[in-house]
Amino acid sequence: MAMFPVVGALVGAIMAAALNIAYFAGLPELFCAAFALAAGALVTGAFHEDGLADVADGFWGGQTREHRLEIMKDSRIGSYGTLTLCLAVLARASLLTALLDLPPLTIIILLAGAAAFSRAMMVDLLWATRPARTGGLSVMAGQPSRNTTLLALAIGGIGAGFGGSMVLAPEAGILALVAAGLTLAILRALAMRKIGGQTGDVCGAGQVLSETAMIAVYAATISLP
Image 1 (cartoon, rainbow, N blue to C red):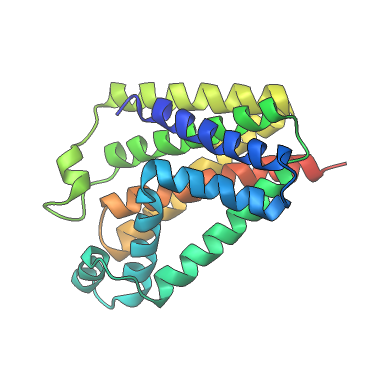
Image 2 (spheres, rainbow, N blue to C red):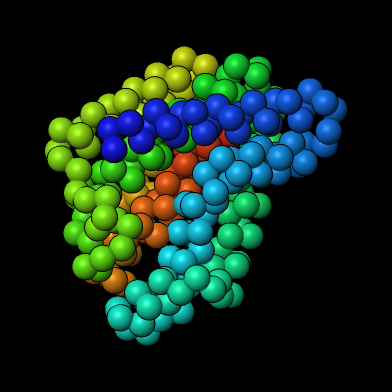
């Protein structure tokens, strides 16, 4: 689990490469962003996006803890999950188009850092939050040790923090880390309230949302005068 951020950095770099290649090919910016997201989904199997959809369906489609967990386990997607995925893709695509004003290497550094730290957030969630089920992917993965969690956070945090600070602005790197942490804290509080803990789906949703929050900080920094 300590290497989750390293894997994330590779995924982010692949997405950034796809974004740059499509842009250099003269394709429309929105297509470039969609191409990058598609590349990321192909590499990961859309694993985390599936978790986000399941969380949306379960948290807002179920009336009790047991019902919510049952919905999240169902492979079918409902209206909440569909809407959440559409909004997430739209939000991420619009943020990626904002990054196209930056040099290619800068885009790679930013997306690799965001992908790395957002996966470190998953390790932190597994360490700090009890499982909501007695089985499932998160239980099979096990609870990481404190040292493993700190190492994952250090790898992802140093990469994203220094990367954002060097290529954009000092405050950008710090604010991106804070945004990711706040996003995960909100999701964790919601998960505790809705299902009493974390699941693999919650971890996947945390990755997508925290990564999106970080890229939003980068895009906002670019737009500042």
